[in-house]
Image (cartoon, rainbow, N blue to C red; front, top):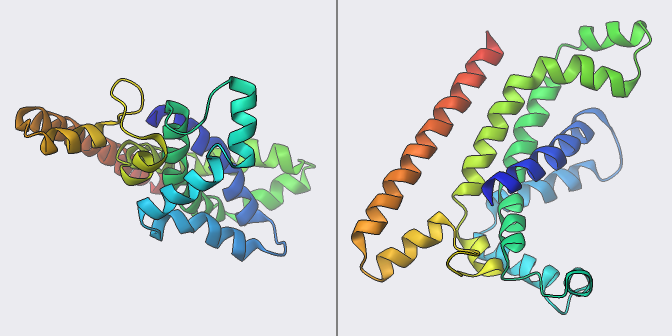
Length: 208
């Protein structure tokens, strides 16, 4: 679920970061505020919003059920959506800063040589900002891996289907199974430490 959420966050987040970093349009600050909202809202509030928007009575929920023959909520796809919404603000914020930090002289030189905006982005801007964007992507993966409240609200706690590591830890503590809880905590802590180390390493490389 975290891997799927990271792939979606990377694609959508990079597009949004480029839009916010390079385009001036009415409502840009409102869009930026809406993207930032999941960072400051309580996870249960965010989960409630998603539940209302994707439930069986909502247009998106009805469309999904008509196409796939079942409701969207309380499925692993809903867990992916929850993790994506939880992770994408961090990726957008960090990627936007990375794109804005690229030297304007390189982009001006590319435009002078006749490069289109599409070619400029893929051949000049993105390569120069790639390490910072990769670091942001790694941190987005860690954030999606640790989501709890939002996922629980929209996907539930179904072992083998929608139960994430964070929810499994909660269940183990509630049931008094301390051995499982400790094992999962150590695994998640080790994975998260490795992710943060990788993100810091990439960030240092981007500045060297």
